[in-house]
Image (cartoon, rainbow, N blue to C red; front, side):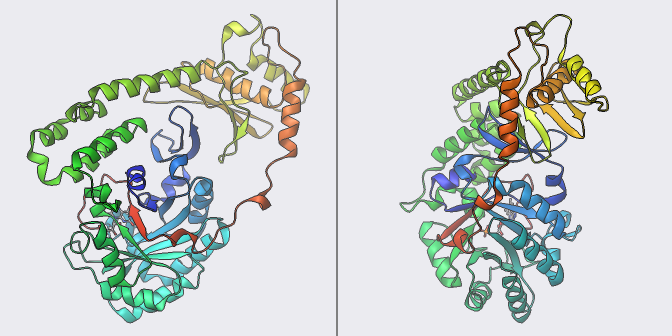
Length: 467
Ligand SMILES: Cc1cc2nc3c(=O)[nH]c(=O)nc-3n(C[C@H](O)[C@H](O)[C@H](O)COP(=O)(O)O)c2cc1C
């Protein structure tokens, strides 16, 4: 949905609210087969998937009630996104009961702590999204306090916490906020009543005196609303959407939800019925005449995955330490490439003994989805892991041992093993140049919002009601 909105002309897109505690369990994984960066939970669910195409456009929105957790999440994702947003507008119980979302609106001290911690601690622009309070006076004093934290922009959904989409949005309240603050104000809440087409977006912006507009539902119903020349037919938009969904391996339930939002009144049509019955991405594609596209794309993807798995060690990545602190390489243990009596695990054990280090400790997990194994080996308080999953625990442990040996330039027992000095030299080069943080791009307050329109995309499995 985000890519589609960008294709059709949105300037910035937001991910759906992602909860800080969930994100903090995630590992950042470069998904070479899909060319994406994935934030993956321990149960292997992809919580946030992004790609280069949206890197300078995507705002990461989090649900949080704690400044330190918020900052940890911001640091986890900041290299892959354009901005960090805190959701303070969600009235749903799952958000408010943890003190997040709209619950924050009644705790200005906490808001201030979270936002100023983020502004100081992350190198991306920080924004927040609020709803209006029962009184305009309180709303204005809250937003002034929020502005003082140094955030780059504020999105305002012009409804009160208990109001639902059927209640009118208050353009006047947004306008009063926009006239009070100097930072950009992003007006939100206009879908349906005010925004039905492209030109309405500018009318809504003017009515609210805001600097830009966030469009949620109207963009969900037809993401081509951002096209200056007018919307594209839904059939075409849905086809484009499905292609992206397959290409990026979107979960079929989410794809189905988003398509249902686009079909809306046509859910009872033959196509709508087929969509309703679909229980997989393939069935969704078939309902839209994209069966051949599905076959072809998944075949290509499988081939790419197989090629990555079959890479020789020389072709595998250089060792790279991810944000979890684990040193990773794409390594597979191929028994045929090693001397019959020697395994990488033996080499590693031998080396630890020689160096008077504690024995290597292996921790292996099995992925429920495909029953493959991955092992992490700890040596001298550092952890090593292959990014590739294996058919057995033994193979996974050998792969982890190779990652450890190879990243330190140690012999691993390979037949005709070249001098380890090459690896050692590479390791030394890495150690000498850990990346100079002072060369990192600074956050530019206001930069995020200089363009006029904003789309909210992504998607949740939650129903429309209540937001
Ligand atoms: C299905 C759905 C999911 C939503 N998820 C979020 C969310 O994750 N974060 C957020 O700030 N707002 C979320 N919203 C609220 C919208 O961002 C927006 O505030 C609201 O729909 C009003 O804007 P609109 O009139 O343009 O739709 C969601 C809305 C809907 C309908």
